[in-house]
Length: 95
Image 1 (cartoon, rainbow, N blue to C red):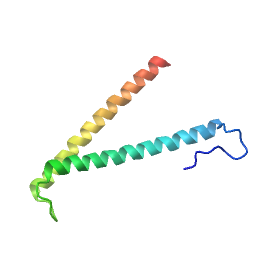
Image 2 (cartoon, helix red, strand yellow):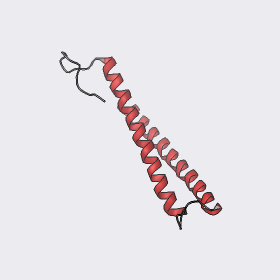
Image 3 (cartoon, one colour):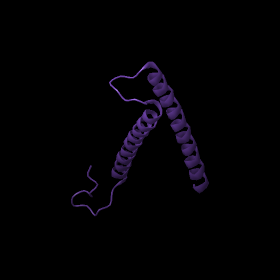
Image 4 (cartoon, rainbow, N blue to C red):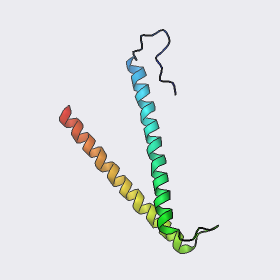
């Protein structure tokens, strides 16, 4: 991704360029969050549920992984929702 100013310009971005840049940054942040979620979910649930790694999961490991992932996603979503609400509250106070 190129963040350099347009050629021949004064280094300032017009409104459209700023909006495009913000969308690109938001997309990259969303991707980074998704990657972090998957990494943490894998690490935590693997450590909790897999006692003897092998070529397949037995039924208790499969059930543990499914429940762990569900709980982790529920928690992640709750935290994200609370964080978003807090940001909106702060934004309304400032604006």
